Length: 208
Image (cartoon, rainbow, N blue to C red):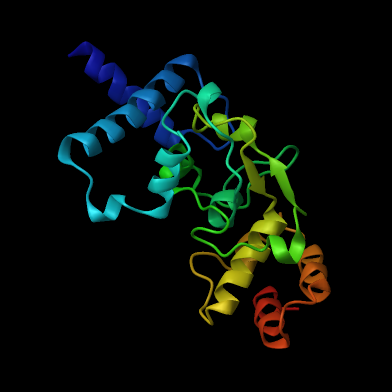
């Protein structure tokens, strides 16, 4: 009973922990327990249709449930809202939902939840985020990459402009204090493969 109370106290502290703050050994162990519970619960009840997402298929196929030193690094990179909630070296995340970074099955990957833009920008604004991600998800594989805030916004704008839908859950004024909109505008204007209509939609969100 005392152990259960201690475990609940740790989990409550994790929910309230500021983004980027270093995790204690106890917190890391508790996060591993949380992940184990989630996986075991799915195994116990059987795989449901909602579990059969591209994310889960890739996690199992690439051995993402193995120890980190036995996994393959992801070929894609984390982007979108996930990247906007991740601190970068010398920069503070403009997003404010860092708690879900602990749940790696919710991460947004290029070419999965959001259309890949490598054909437009190559690897500009993509960096190795392994160390920072391990502060939230200790079993993050080596060489896991993420989009910079500028690349994450570019990817979001491109995705929803192609779908002709509004960008959900984030507005320009929410993040302009930390994101270089001039650089995003430059990337949009330099992308020769983007149609004028798509460029206009992307720039409209930036209000430029």
